[in-house]
Length: 406
Image (cartoon, rainbow, N blue to C red):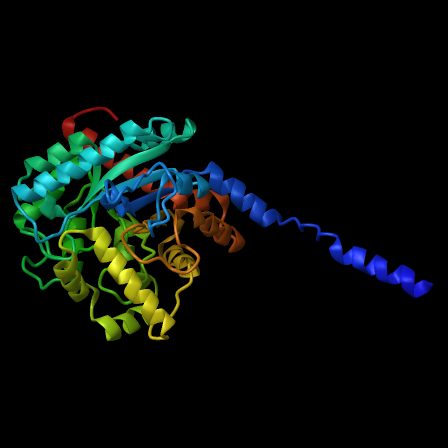
């Protein structure tokens, strides 16, 4: 009799669903994240516009990292769309291709008025956030796109571009790249004039991709703080695209900000060394992929992604966790404080670490920072406030140059 009563009771107990345990830290992190301006300074999503039926307004399961549904899911509400072309292209063709991409971004905003607003100032980013819209900004990734014509800095600025990376994987006519042999000993005299003109136009000087000497030249010349739109920490991963501690200190001393890149080679030195042993240096790989894909950046990204997955499955490359992003943020904060670091993912332009497969995963970063004891104020700075502060400083320099009040 006793056994008959006990067994059904136990079965019932097993069938009752477990009660969810409240996690106040996770709840707080979620509220903090979705009430903050979450700004990413480098997304190569522009390269997908018009590509094989890609539709930014719907969820795309084609290996892309960014679209409107996933931005909403990830609380991602301020994005710098990157304007990129192969750095072998120079002169008028480079200008034309850059203008085509600027037009694509402006058209994207026009086509999605309920979700996107074009933003060219920090105040416009904040207004878009208040209205529940996503702020769309533009950054030119490579000074070769001005076609060696200073006037194009003014044209790009007038069309809404708010940063320009001084070089890309190769040197251009006036700036040395971190992944090319020095040709100008940093910035040429014309390159320094480009920096001056960027200051006058309120265009942020971006030193991701540049040689160390180019960085120090730009730091000396610029009246506004510099940004590294998508670079990580060289002390953690020794890639030349990353910034040394001395560079980070110098950047911070002049008010600048380093935006952490999530690309596997830049996050993990173990991965970087294994990748170079397997495939050669990233810059060499870039040349090989160009022969296979031409100017098709999506093709190049897909080819690299396939190779990485195959090598990881064969045990030839290590896995890298998204938590390495936090390690890089922590390093910068311990080095120079929480006012000088932000997010520059390289979404849609690089291979992401495990757990950060697309932008819907961004709330993990906020929760990790909360659990590590970061204050709400510092987290809001890291998520976007630091970059907005630098934008405001660049706007003041531009206003002073024009004799305008700000």
